Image 1 (cartoon, one colour):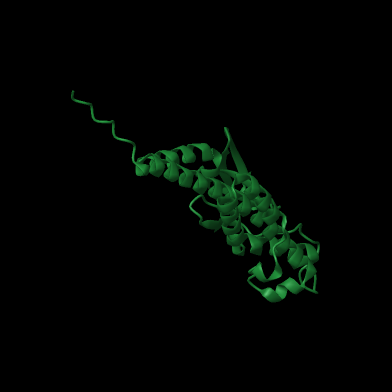
Image 2 (cartoon, rainbow, N blue to C red):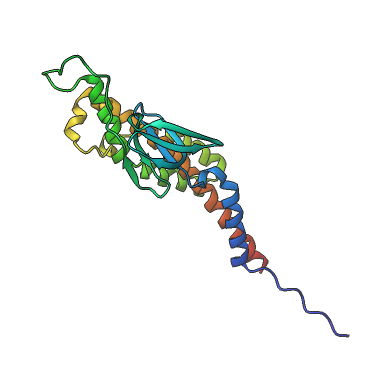
Length: 210
């Protein structure tokens, strides 16, 4: 009696491709190609920039189209990683120029501006991704939280003028912005770690089934 040949199993490569596609769908907003509009007050607004003119900037956030004056936007961080400085951070005008140099508020604003450009938080991304990949999503969540909430150490601040960090106002502005960037990058790393684990599990399952 002639027997039918068994149906071919799905290859591990095909399963991995399916899992990667599923992961990209689950990631949703985290992988969305959105720009970031950084206001002069330090707020970061996600959106898609439509147009930039000398007087205003138009962008879409959610379902709303917003138009803001260029004087209220410090820089735009585009989805492809490039940055465009729109206007310098300024403080309210004073009746007369201070002869003894920048004020504390101006130095703090300068520190925030420098940190937005210089500090990238790459170590936070790598650490959170590695911890999540090797420890799993639950323990990785605890590790990522610890990484995100730990202040950036002085040696990792990467200030353009390290001597400026001796000024308490400049150092406060720079450190606060660097800490905010580190928190955002740490949770990005957590998402990467979870995604890598899903791909690895898919490969193991596909290999075991062959």
